[in-house]
Length: 464
Image (cartoon, rainbow, N blue to C red; front, side, top):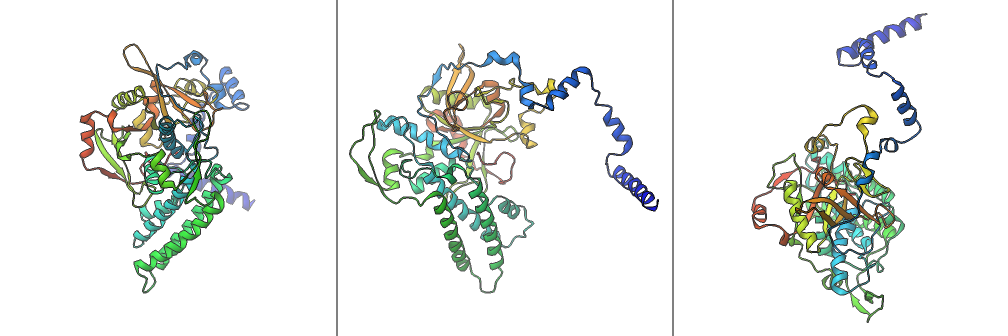
C-alpha cells in the first residue's frame, strides 16, 4: 500500500514538473489525441502502412506519364562507373569529367577509367594529416571549443568535393584503373573509415596532451605527427594496396587493340592523359540562405593541407542553368551535386517532386521552400554526379536534365538519373563549370574577397 501511494505521489509530482516546464500533461495529451480520428479511409491507410513502405503507398499514379528519356542536347559519355558501397561519388564524378576528355582526345576504349583507388589512398592520408595538423594548431583551445569539437566529430571520411579532386590530381597524378584496381575496402569503405576515425581521435588526444609537456616544441609535435601518419599509411596500404611509383602500360585504341608499352610515373601519365588547368574550373552554388553574386569560402573544407579551401560563387538558378546549357551544347560534361534522395524513383531513375504524394497519404502538408529546408538541415547536397544532358523546349528553356551516376549501369535509367527542371531548381546545389562558359560579368565577381564560413554550416557536408 505504501509503495502504491509513493508511486502515485511521484507520478503526480513528475506530471506537475513537466507541465511547468512545457511538458505534455494529461489535459494536453487529451487535446493532442483528438487530432487522430480514424475514418474508414484513414483506417485503410493505417492498415496498409503497417504492411508496406511509405513510398509504395505514396506513388503518384497521375505522374506516371511524366517520364521521358528524350534529350535535345547530350554529351557523348562512355561506360557507367560504380562506386559500390562507398562514399566516393565526388571522386568518381571528378574523374569521370577527366576520363571523358581522355577517351575522346586519345581514342581510348569506352570502358577506360582512371584508378579511383589510387587517389582515394592519397585522399585518406592527406585528410589524416589535415586533421592532425588542425589539432596541433588548435591545441591551446578547450575541448569544448566549437572548432575543436567539430574536428573530433569529423576527423576523416570518404566523402568530398571537386576541389579535392583538383588538388589530389595536381599533387599525385593519376594512373589507369588496371594499374591500381579496387579492393574490398575501397568498394566497401565503412569499416576502414570507422577504424581510421577511431585511431585519429586517439592520436588527436595524444597530440593535445603532448603539447602541454615541458619542452614540447612545434618541431617535436610535428615529429609525433609524422609517426602517427606512418600508422595511418600502414592501415591504408593493408586495405587499399600501396600506390605505385612507376609502371608500364599499353594503351588500347577504341577497338581494344593495344599499342606499344611505355613506362610512366603517375605524374607523367597525368601529363599525357589528364593534363588540366584546374583554375579554369569554377564552383557555382545555389544557396538561397546567403546573398547571391557573392563568393564564399569554407574553412577546413579541403582535402590537402596546402591546397585550396572550397570556394564558390553563389548564383540564382536561372544564371546557373544558362551556363550549364552552354556547356552541354559544347559537349562538355560537368561535376554536379544535389540532394539525390528527395522524390527519387529508383526503379526508373527519375527525380520529380510529383513522384510521391506524401501530403495526401498522411493528411498533412509540407510547405518549406528551398531556403527554409537548407536553414533547418532538411535538405543539402548529398551526392555528386556528372551533368550530361538537357532537354530544351521551343523557346530554349530547360524541361528536364540528365546526370550520369556512379551506381553501376543497372541502376536508374541505364545508369543515369533524369530530373525535371522543377526538381533541378529545388534540389540542385553545386555545379563546376569551365570558365569559357561563364559570362565576363559573372567571372568578374570572383575578384571579390571571399566571405569565410565555418565548416559546420548546414550546406557543407561532403558529397557521398
